[in-house]
Image 1 (cartoon, rainbow, N blue to C red):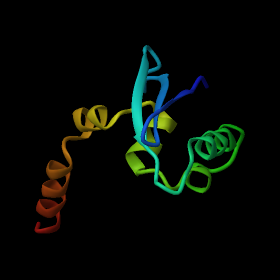
Image 2 (cartoon, rainbow, N blue to C red):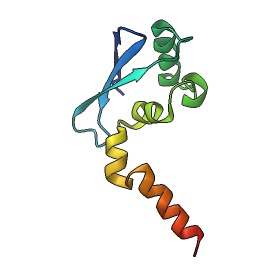
Image 3 (cartoon, one colour):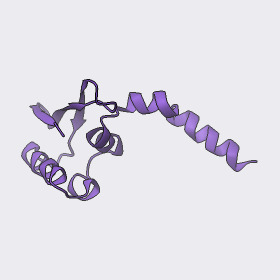
Length: 98
């Protein structure tokens, strides 16, 4: 898998990888927690790429960021496929009331 990182100011990282359908390269910006350096993130990402579980190696990232790293699906793609978070919650509430 081809994942590239580029360091940005203010402890942010640009991550590029093939999109979820594998057709084009997609770029996503990640804000790292204050206590995680860019160097540590790159090492942790490499640990995942070589077999560590993503929740163990970069579990400090937001789930949307981890999903992008795993699948190439951005939050926008997930909304297009499954609907917005509000739509998902409303569908769940409707199903529970039946």
